[in-house]
Length: 335
Ligand SMILES: NC(=O)c1ccc[n+]([C@@H]2O[C@H](COP(=O)([O-])OP(=O)(O)OC[C@H]3O[C@@H](n4cnc5c(N)ncnc54)[C@H](OP(=O)(O)O)[C@@H]3O)[C@@H](O)[C@H]2O)c1
Image 1 (cartoon, rainbow, N blue to C red):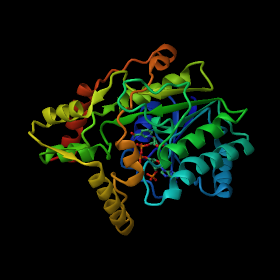
Image 2 (tube, rainbow, N blue to C red):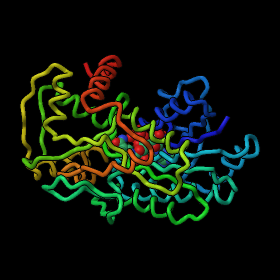
Image 3 (tube, protein in one colour):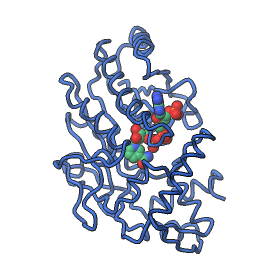
Image 4 (cartoon, rainbow, N blue to C red):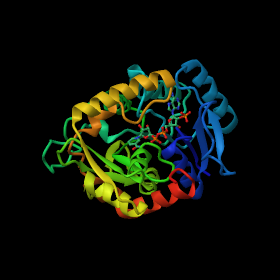
């Protein structure tokens, strides 16, 4: 049985990766923190390893102990990361420095796997040209517009500089589905009868349903491909209005359309951040995220994903939203 380590296992994407790994017959090791929730890591065949990416000495001994008992991992998916924080320095330290610590330690411990997958983000490339339907291309120069995207890009560049590492970099666009807590904010807003728009420009958005996303990881592991990068997205793009309409239809709600000027949203993001700093709960809408949210073109190139990994989304937005709303309701996340 091939051993796979999945970091960030306790999160939205990580929990689905763990389940899929077990379903496909891997020996799955969920990389968690001592404090991580195990709410969605209940499968009886799941193994756990506590990892501390911040402290290289501790990480070295945690991974060293694993190796002496179990040997090395065949595959690793480094998926741990943050998309929001009250502390601007966290982006770089968690998304980049922790990734570097991890790779340095597995190199020193002679634990380099057969393949190392890294969850980056489309944000590492930044949005496409405003008022255009030209997709963000894989061969263009990355131009991230926020700290989150910059931290992912720095991690990518470090990974690409490692001669011994056989890597695949995956750059998802917006991922949605059951268990997801950020888009949930939009579903709840519409459920309460409001649909907010950031300014009056048409936004071209892209999405990938979580179950489509995780198939790509395992297809990439099982393929002969190495040292490649892909954007992960459904090939279709959607206007914000269409996204909201599909949610509305599924929730069977009527909602009131509010077009918010960008400056009001900026003010709201600032206030949200101040509250977040005091309460310790970091808000979905914050200044760094706003740089991404207000961009108008998130169309990205997916032909390489189709040609090289044979990817075809099983879920378009319509089907994915149906399943997401059903799950939110069944689990009481939306009343
Ligand atoms: N969701 C999206 O739309 C999207 C799009 C593009 C890329 N991504 C990337 O996908 C990955 C997973 O995101 P997600 O949406 O599943 O987010 P999530 O639900 O917030 O999960 C994040 C995971 O990372 C772990 N983590 C955070 N800081 C850590 C640290 N300092 N040390 C160890 N583990 C840490 C969390 O552990 P705890 O539970 O202990 O906090 C959690 O397991 C991230 O790298 C994110 O940047 C997400």
